[in-house]
Image 1: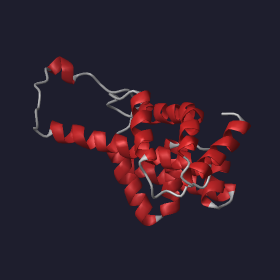
Image 2: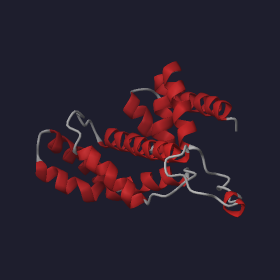
Image 3: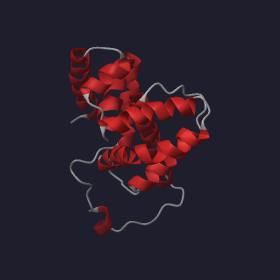
Length: 187
């Protein structure tokens, strides 16, 4: 995304916030590639990756445009909300899969099928969500830093700006949260 696009996103968000439907039409193509990048990032960490980035972006974008309560501040705020929304979508899908595994329409699995192992770098979305929820109870800002950096792919400068803190604070929060999450997730 070029600097012109970044400024344009903020202008379009402000126009959309004021009720300009044409601003939403202009916003979609400008943010689409960045939303796909965020979606790919989310999906690359998921163990049971059954959703395509395009489908995740489409579902998130539909939810974003139907959200009337958000007072968009700028592009960083928009992408942070989009990243959180994508995370929620994946968590909801993981919970639904988990419920199906508990007997609802359970399928037989052969030993050979059961021997298939997830990629080493895959994570359990539900376990991460539970750990982030616990972290948010202890320190909400640290949980926000994780969401913005890990799920949203934002850099320290962008996170610092969005949260109104210094880069050093973001870096300290990230180091603490990363260590805390590793301990909670057992890896």
